[in-house]
Amino acid sequence: MRRISVQQRPDLAKTARVHGYDYLDGMPYWDETAYYRFSLRQIEDGIEKPAMEIDAMCFQLLDRSVADETIYRRLGIPAAYWDYIAASWKIREKDLYGRMDLSYDGTGDAKLLEYNADTPTTLYDSAVFQWVWLEEASAAGLIPEACDQFAELHDDLVQAFTAMDNGGIVHFACLIDVEDDKDTVDYLEECAQEAGLQTQFLAMREIGVDETGRFSDLEDRVIETLFKLYPWEWVMEEEFGRFLVTSGVHFLEPPWKAVLSNKGLLPLLWEMFEGHPNLLPAYFEDDATVGALTDSYVRKPLLSRQGANIEIVDAGKAVSQTDGLYGEGAYVRQAFHPLPEFDGKFPLVGCWMVAGRPAGLSIRESTTLITDDEAKFIPHVILD
Image 1: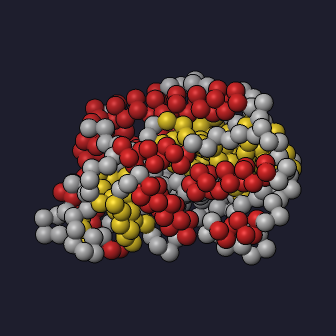
Image 2: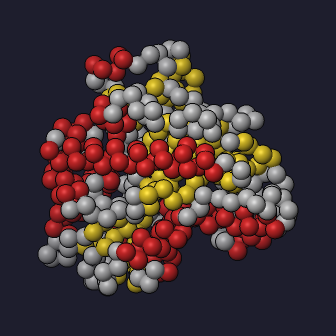
């Protein structure tokens, strides 16, 4: 794994606008003045294989949760939804996608830092725009012609939508004023349409409830399948959350993803699979077992997005910290395993999962050890 400087495409502004990006002296979250180079073995053995193992461990945890409700309690999930989540897993409701965030430098074992199993964004960048960069940079002689990329995301998403076609409308919803969320939902809706599905977009506030407790759209059609880029913990706090059980909706992501998208997943996995090479020691902060950690750890809220409210403690001293809106709830502590450093930059490797299999790679690069909402997206190549 190497970080290689490269010339930016001379027509980037035009390409960006073609793909719907605003371009004002650059793209704020995209940087193609460098790329990361992997060998095929690093991708297959160093990233894909661990992702599959972690996914299998998550499924074992979900199996356990059906019989052990203390898991839901430790995750802070409201008791009113325990049976709902368990039932979703018992019938193996289909999921769509997620992203495992890993610390990996091309050598040794990739370490799971967290799993965004419910609401990951930067999907279009990962699935389409970095592939366009690969083709155009190769054609322009900026990178070797033999370069490939781990980018099966688009085809796998279309295939996943094809497999779930039930003949009805698939509704898509998010907060329309959050640009990253809306862009991600727009792209996923395009994938569903490519799969031949009929779709309809709604703002979250436009979802209604009919007299029978079913969710409905603005034309009073019953919602049967709903992709919602809206965290499960928010749904459960909303007034309409009390209608989840009667709604009959197949949600994407399904209710069981509320277990995997919670950072309490980290200590639960460690408890079940202590010593696994792709896991880091992790504990709930209010458990007596947290004393097993040394004085170097990362403190994370159970629920947060985009690196908010994270604190890194190294040798007993706070060395990095972010603010945010998630600081009031419970926390976990995870052993401090710093991101690798390349040329003063810290890359976080994201392995995308689609319908339970690895499907693509994204790298978000920061100038600090915490990957926050200012991180840049850096493309990658595979070249032996």
